Image (tube, rainbow, N blue to C red; front, side):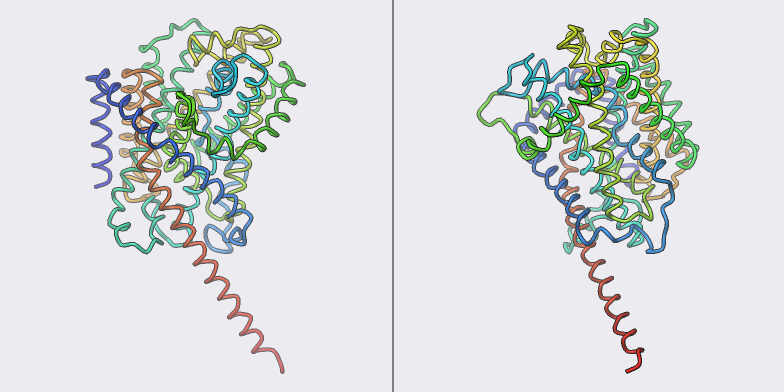
Length: 505
């Protein structure tokens, strides 16, 4: 039933976007205005609460509990595990926004800061760290931990609804189908948003390297070709296609960042990382709860609220995928690997690309901000044009985005297939094929309905109801962890009493 309900809803939206794109765009715009005006605060509070919960679990006594049997070993090495979760979590987004976001904030900073000033540059980097650091990974981590805990310790299927079973309210279990449908719809639109963004950047990269024209036809062609590629990868399974592609792409991304670090303003990049990390930590709480009730500004809703909605919409997909590859790890190891390590990697990435771009913009008069104003997807390639070996780096970046596109798409088809078939860990090729085509159809219809703006709007609209589900999952997870810890502690006490009784008096 979940398969037909969720697929039916998605097909309806796809057809709406293809047949009447202007109507779909207008409907999403109206919904966006209502949600960001009335529920922006809700996203901020929920995501901050998830950050605090993840950190508390990591340092608490509960961190020793294992996701599986006590003698179970992890299925994948730490390197392969990190590569897969990072590629699935935000690969395309980092490449797309690594230069574009800091430069965008520099030209249009948060309210109260003058554009084009040193304060704007500092704020630009601080908010890039904020939007791609602990907060998004904590959303992923708590959702993934909830699914993994109930799947591997309680023997449940790989479904979002299973992670609410520790709640004492009967109505929660009656809504399990609804929870799973919301997870599928949020996942489909969240992944489609990233695929749409990926198509825009691949198109800009091909234009920079080969002169391919930028437009809707090349972008739809890119979506069609990459769909064939990620469906082929998805059909080979996690142990082959997804694992090897993710590991390869992490190496390519690291080499590209190292090249920019060496050929770019190296000292300025190190200074940027040091300064921004300090600013990020000192301003953490204020940024986490920042709204603008006394200003007529859409900055927070256009950036922070959008990002939080994006991470929420991706969380069932990334959560199920991370859970799928994390059996055998302790809760502490899991949170360190899914929150702290990838956050640090994101900080380094933005320091290298954003720091280099801002340095070139401010001190070398490279017009990167003009490129961002004209087309945000060209930001990375505008920076490469001002560097030695820029054409080669642009070509590598296009390949990087393409492979991230494939790893996101194949991971998404696997997870959507699992969620829509009752938690089957190995859904049939026909189900994967259907979901791959539907996700590509969503990305196509959103691009037709208004490009990147429609993609962002759809993400926020479909993420809101699933945010409530995440709260239920988090509360259920906390109850279940305490129950298992208390049960384990009681077993230890009984064992000690038995051993004591066997000792000679």
